Amino acid sequence: MSEIDSLKAQLQALQEKALALFADAADLKALQALRVAYLGKKGELTSVLKGVGKLPPQDRPVIGQFVNATKNALAEALDKAESLLASKEKEARIDAERIDVTLSGRTSTPGALHPVQQGLHEMTAIFSQMGFALAEGPEIEDEFHNFDALNIPAEHPARANHDTFFFDIEGTADTKLLRTHTSPVQIRAMQACVDAGGEPPLAVVAAGRVYRCDYDVTHSPMFHQVEVFKVDKDVSLAHLKGVLQHFLSAYFEKDVPIRLRPHYFPFTEPSAEVDIGCVFCNHKGCRICKGSGWIEVLGSGMIHPNVLKAVGIDSSIYSGFAFGLGVERLVMLKHGIPDLRLFFENDVRFLRRMGAK
Image (cartoon, rainbow, N blue to C red):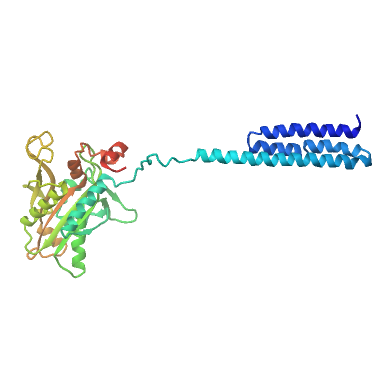
């Protein structure tokens, strides 16, 4: 066999083998590897062409035409295989991403307010509708606003270290504390009114976090309170009871009986604990209310004259009422929650049950 016939045979065999491999290529990546293997600078076709230089000059044009025909055949076969594979991959991707519009939509889980925050919003909204203005105050307080101005004596247990979080601020001689109730906002609101040259009437609701050294199923070292007070001429205990009756019935979404029992608070005189008819047994007597039909919910009273004096309000002209309630306690009663600590453990099952998803 002549040299030129031998090269033609090699090119023919190379073309047949390459076309078969192109047709069997699994994907575009494999096809690209075959393109490099056969038509690249160091590919199979280049290796065969090295033998062209050994041919006599008159035979080279003949084999050149054969080489070009082989190269064109391989390139055309590669393009067709590439187009076919690209089409198949597109169809596979479309099938994989196909959406069945007849299927039911996926359920989303929107966020919601924490049950305590929801309770705060509900309570302050009721008081706002009654004409009480919303006020805020600092959570880090001094002894004057937290105790002295509220007529709390120096020997009162609330001022002991075992009940209150005291701390010193570096560089100052002042003793600070985490406020133990929201009543300091009452003092600050009345002071601000007097300092601005104003005078009552004042009707304020203040909500926020408070802190005490206590922790069990009904107490937490951090919890939330709502403070409500009104100062004006001729404010009486009847006004206090009317506000309490409206608020408690509105919050529990039904008429609830209330009663005021004599009690003692340093900042009110007279003072009263407020009970509501048990919301679990409709005032008939059950395990929750210990058979009495009543549940204690908050403390209240008429603002002590010493408190008005501390902020510069004449108690011979003005009087007022005040009461404070624990937000968690009322939320527990409204929703039948047995343990205060559930509010702070962030158990998703509890939060979902309460609607905070």
